[in-house]
Length: 84
Image 1 (cartoon, rainbow, N blue to C red):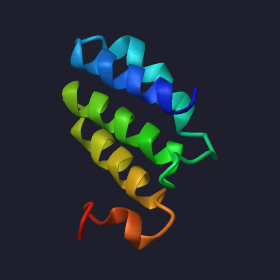
Image 2 (image 1 turned 90 degrees about the vertical axis):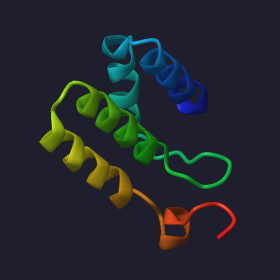
Image 3 (image 1 turned 135 degrees about the vertical axis):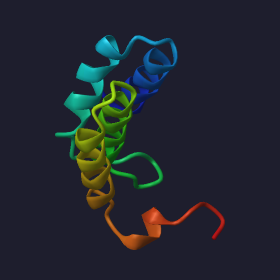
Image 4 (image 1 turned 90 degrees about the horizontal axis):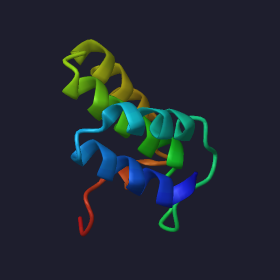
């Protein structure tokens, strides 16, 4: 699915179409590829899943998914905000 897929997933979430976005993000959670700037696509997948769970009121699941997203970062530099 790659980068275009997660952008599509974000657009679907913004349109309130989480049911269509969820499989896109779940597929990404198993990805081993990275974006051009080195971010793991699996991390992006977990962030998307977490946002959907949060929106559905499944807060414990969202917290776990956000944790998995952060754990997928390759190193601590990726956890920093740009420009820091």
